[in-house]
Image (cartoon, one colour):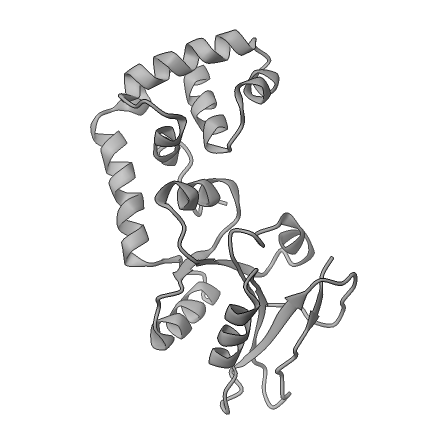
Length: 216
C-alpha cells in the first residue's frame, strides 16, 4: 500500500480531503497547487511509493489509467474515485468505465473553475464526465440501441461481449463460461456478423448497452 506525503492541510476548517495518485508527478504537483489556496477548502496529498500510511481518509481520489487500482477502493470504499483523462482513446475510456468503480471523469484540458465544480458535484453524489467524452458514450449507446444488436444476441453471446470488454482472451473466456475455446471463436464470429464489426475493440461500446457505466 502506498504512503502519502506532501500534506497541504492547515487545520483551519474541515476541508475536502483529496488524494492525488497520478503516474505523472508534475501533474500531481500542478493539481495540488490548483487545489490548495488561502480558503483552506481542500486538503491535498500526493501518493508516493512506500508501504504504510495512517491518519488520512480521503473524500476523493484522483487517478489515471495507470494508477486506477482496487487497493484504493478496498481501503477507502467511501471515497469518490475520479479518473483524470490524460488522453485516453474512446475504447480505453469505455473499457475503464465498464471495469472499474469510477464516479467521474475529468480531462486535463478542464479549466480551474470547472475542475473545482466537478470535484464538488462528484462529492455531492452527482456523476461528472466531460462533454466530449459524454457524447462518445451517448453515441455508442444510441448506435447499438437503434440497430437492436443487443436483442439479436443470445445470452451466451452477450456474456462473451462483456468478457471481451474486460480484455479477456478466448482461452480465459472459455474458462470463465465453461465452454471450449473453439466454441468461443464460433460465437465471436456470429457476434461480428450481427454487430457488423470486424474487430474485438469495436465490440467494447456494445457492452455499454449491457452494463451501463457508473452502475456500481
